Amino acid sequence: MPQNDSAPIVAGTGYIYLADPDTAKPTTITDPKDPGAGWISIGHTSLDDLPEFGRDGDDPETLGTWQNNNLRQTSPKIKYSITFQSVQASAETYQLYFGAGAEAVRPDGSFRIPARPTPQVKALLMILVDGTNFVPLWHPRASLLGKDAVAMSTDKFMSFPIIATLLGSALIGNDIGEWAAVLTPGTGS
Image 1 (cartoon, rainbow, N blue to C red):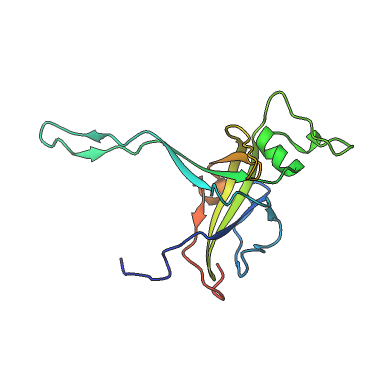
Image 2 (cartoon, one colour):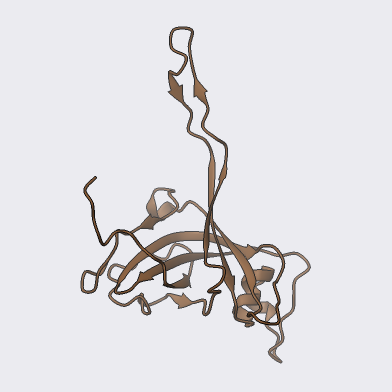
């Protein structure tokens, strides 16, 4: 693989957007702050605890025969996820964290926490920004729900950890997403 000096990314800034499940990948992104119609920003996320990509599942197993100890390796079942920390105490954050639909927002503006959470399934678009370069990461179906405890501190923003478990989508042959190569200003996606 040839060296590409613009491919190493320092995710100094980033944006996370949600849309209806199975929303198509934006055809052109020229501004990371505006991925196009249908995509809604989740707002501010933690600078101290950047999003984390998780991989959980079986390890591949090597199968052998009497003639060849290392004949073949299995394809393990893997679950991928993205965990991020929302720092906005808003109805939208509460819906994701507590697993509640729009009906949880009361007429007086308060939020009713359901006794039984229901993951919110959305399309997810994360755009990593390094200077003028950026990388769009698109997942047409993600199941979002709170993970771990809400964190509070006297010198940091309150944070709501939310995990997005990446789901297969018929939109892309039951795969879980598409990540673009590094984009530079004017190249779009």
